[in-house]
Image 1 (cartoon, rainbow, N blue to C red):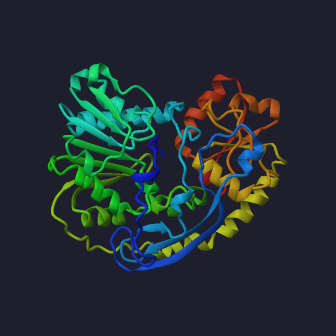
Image 2 (cartoon, rainbow, N blue to C red):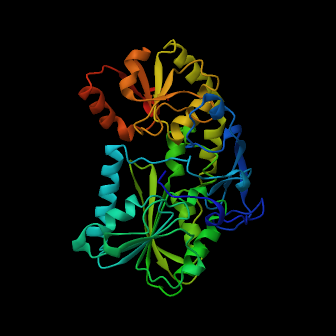
Length: 404
């Protein structure tokens, strides 16, 4: 997940009827997956274990559109979501993730011709990605970040970069934009169609603007049996086809949709055009059903395997994947000693739900931890390099291939 804010008006509290797909608008939803007592927030900072355990929880009931493949949580309750200063999903402490962001920014600058442009980022968080598009003076870009939770200076770089502590909707139509970027926001929105209409309204005076979206790929989750990638915060899950259906229904022409970040994310480029409904059917419903039917077997298997480590194992990654996995597999802290994270703001705290302690990888030897489950294979090389530099010997196990 990126660093945007997702509260109040950015997330519309209007929802389609329970039988209507939030992407294509058809009435073809089939329920396939349920989970109770899921932590509502995956990135809230807790300094006390009891606080971490006594968090608000919610139910997950996923339904798949048999036509376009969109997946939404029918039990999502927006009133439970409260993003504030204790919420920290920053990934900037990972050199591997920062390298990925640099590559993505350079792709926009040098391959997509984002030069001499006014760039708007919706849900910009602390502005780290937008800053990369503006800081190269030779690109001659200006940037405007919209996020009511933004904390920082109003302007930077002699005014070429500025931030608005509000939402990007029809009230921003007087803001000319050549490019609009929205990274890892749409999966937090119960009615993504409404979000796109708001962005389209904001672009009423910028009809030629290019729009770029990034969101997790549900097909990757299904293919990898990634039960740890289902969380309450993500109430909307997209396949290539459902993302296409949603944008065309909202009046955008799709230029391309591709998989990036090791196929874990979808990256979309589009522009405004007259509404034209997408007609292709998806066919992921069976895969979704199979995925759901195997979750209980996965949980039982993982518990058996983890018992073999006699408590001398950690989870590497205190983000959404690690928090979801811990709550699913070890809710009472009987199997896993701790959770490793590179973010110093999280270290010495506790993860939501289970209350596992969050530590630095440098603390593992004194805890007697000899193995760690790596929740995301994209960080394997980085973590091995950190361990080597610190002279640590640790068995690093990829959750996606070692146990599944």
